[in-house]
Amino acid sequence: MTDSSGEISTNSFAPGGRRRHRKTKARRVGVQRGVVLAMAVPVVSATLAGTSAFAADSSAAAQGISADDVDPEDAKLVEDLKERIDDPRLGSNVSGVVLDGDSDKTLWDHNGSSTLMPASNAKLATATTALTLLGENHKFTTRAVYGDGTLTLVGGGDRTLTSDDVTEMAKSAADGLKAAGRTDVKVRVDDSLFADPSLAEGWTEDYYNTEVTPVRSLVVDGAAVDDTSIDAGNVFAKKLAAQGITVDGDVSRKTAKPTDVPVAQHTSGPLSSIVKTMLKTSDNNIAETLLRMSAVQLGQPATFESGTALVRQVMSSYGISLDNFVLHDGSGLSRDDRIPAETLAQLLDVVTESPALSSVLDGLPVAGEAGASLGPEWGRFDDPKSECAVGKVQAKTGTLTGAVALSGVTRTEDGDWRIFSFIENDSTADPADIKDAMDGLAATVNGCWA
Image (cartoon, rainbow, N blue to C red; front, side):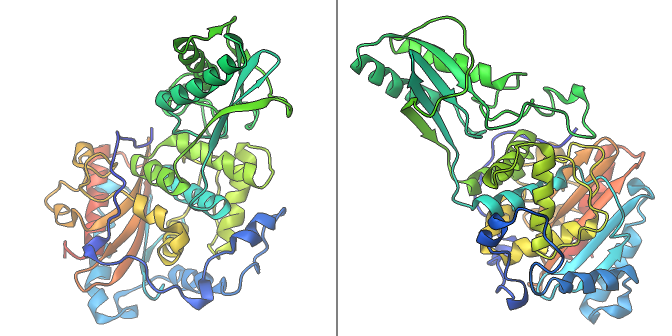
């Protein structure tokens, strides 16, 4: 299963108490949204100038990085990582990459191009794609429309819709009906924005409804049920009844007509806030919804296939390596997903340089942050060797049976940015012990465990 947790604060955090964004480099200013939105075919390797920068780093990494290849102050870091990556708790199938965030130089690489299951670290790519294609201020709209004696609740991909929001929609709809002299109505739901739910490659049916629900464009209160759309319609019907409107018959599906009259709507918070929540709590359902909404933005079918194709397209546009990159979903639940540590490190390097992607950085859980997936309730950064990094490391967690990942950023005591990604697969150690070892690697990168 993947990591998850309860409600969290989305307050911004900068490791070391310093501003996180570096001056954007001219050679890699980030993809222009308008250009990406216009693309209908996969991006070729020459989409943006300057995409060779990562290729150069990867080439150097492939040759191996030793203490002699780095500045003297980083030599201790390299030697410590070389020793600690051999921790038996991590097993033999483990990889890691550390970048100097200010220069993009690869400081350390251990099997960084290996094809390993990333688990929920895949959400970093999903979040980046959604922000690139939709924009950080994008909002999702749920509508209620009326026609031929029927109120239809139309899903708009808002995974944050609550019963309180639906109450307000019901009040507006009821007021309109009463003003027109009508007090009875049929209720239908329209979730045609997304293709019918299906299993991604690498998913099994037992994922429903513990890890994820069948992906639909309409849901209220994040209901963990097979048919979230009908459930939402039933909530809407009950709210209408509370307003004195008689609902005739059962709720069922119906595609709204262009001639139907809008009677109510609710708009979500901005995408930036939704991305933060998704990353902090590692919410699989939000991730899969954002994957489909990215496809919708380009007029593509709202499916796993269309969404993951756009992830590749966007990452390529940023100059991020797609070598050994395989993605079948937006959440990282698929056991067939493969993302190398070097790719995740490159992605985070892009994020730290682009203000438009700042909500990805803001959404990374902070070591020791209660309510997020690196909080003490999950046993993270509570080992004597890693507790020194509490409040100093931000990282996305990833957990599946047989896979643990941790990718993030930190600032050393000297104020230097470090970007890291660690992934292990197939360790037979206790998962809690594996995570302790991972946390120790992050503390090593920070420099507090020296």
